[in-house]
Length: 75
Image (cartoon, rainbow, N blue to C red; front, top):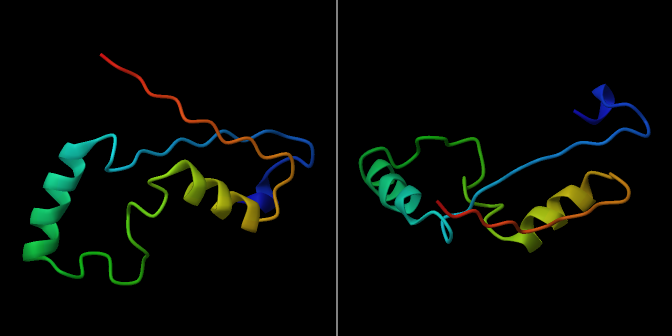
């Protein structure tokens, strides 16, 4: 992805975690029970579930001037 971006461009990413969206955890637990390796080649789906884990992953990619904010919306 980094190769496709402009050198001084901006990218915005959004993630959600099971701690703020508990019904995802309910759904995924059932899926994992019946299909234990439903994505065997990939890391856990909730690996970016916290602001810190997401920010660390972005820093490791080599992007500069990173800003990671937690924004909670309520309906």
